[in-house]
Length: 114
Length: 112
Image (cartoon, rainbow over all chains, first blue to last red; front, side, top):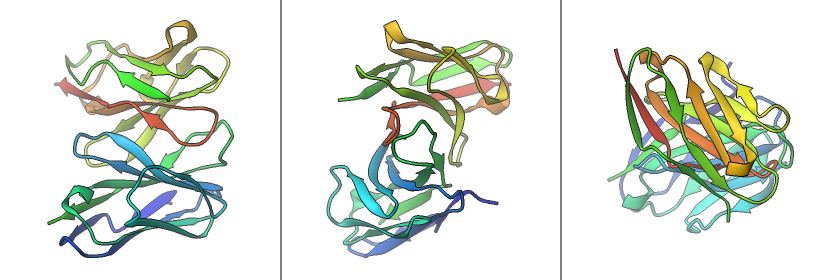
């Protein structure tokens, strides 16, 4: 059983397109996250939702819009894709927002914008 | 602002050598500390974590880490590495929940 699953695993698209990445967790966690890993493997948080409510929104261009239809799902929609958006995007979840608990990560989505 | 610094960008060891990866963080309050590992092409997996209690924590695959509060450090150790330990290692911190702040990562290459 995959705890945190993301689709697709790979995504190649042209500049200017709009794309979505989906994430689902079956751990019963309340909190979900999107992290971006750049070409130098540096990981930085983008967004976090707790029980469908946005609680963290780092300085991310508003072309990126997360959506959480329920607490088990957190999708990421990206409008007008740019070359600089090429990265690996990781979804993660944790039991609750303000507790001592670790985050569980999905397999990642490697986005390549050409 | 919180930050995490990993001392080594790339470490190359022979099998059976001992490993120590440095990690320092800057945050004045209570923190949770983590080491994650990312094998080539895979997702991040938790190696070990520190929330409170014994500052020497043991994780999976023979890894351990020591939290030294006075030095704001959480160094990762393994007495004898294997080729299969080749991976990227990330130190991370959060302040009791919420977002993880990651270090830059250390690439470990183990030569058979």
